[in-house]
Length: 206
Image (cartoon, rainbow, N blue to C red):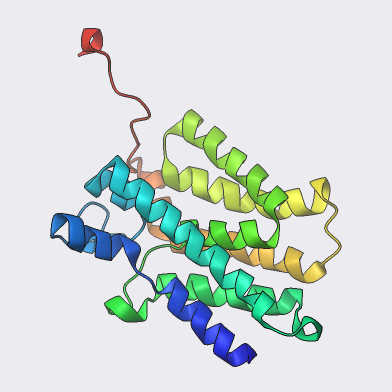
């Protein structure tokens, strides 16, 4: 049963909403535009606010839903390790989606859904870190990395999380985010990373 659920989690994670919405609504492959990343940030940049929001919500939901598959197991088979496995397969599916040639995104939104399902309190605080860094830097990649790096700290120092497995997983998440953002790190060091516009200029400022 657990093997079947792990496969379902992977297929859920493989749901390439950014690619499909780009094709269905705009007739383009998102991976050929903007940063070339099949994720919510590039969807906002290329497809606009409404489509980007839709991609973000759907990507978060698929990570959340994958972890919640745990409830389909008998009570005696439910465990943190099984939930982590489901979450990992969902993120892996987003990174390497079977439906669109295994060319996915960086998995941040899907990872957020996984973390919300695992520990909503730590997820909320990590989201706060993301927003704070986004307001300060206007750079999504910096904000994503800061939020991921803060997650194990929240679990250890704020929530005194008793599960060593979950803490180790949080460190693995931080490492994964750094790895998937290695190109962004290079651009940051070169001063070439894109910044987002947080508000529109008023008519007097134009």
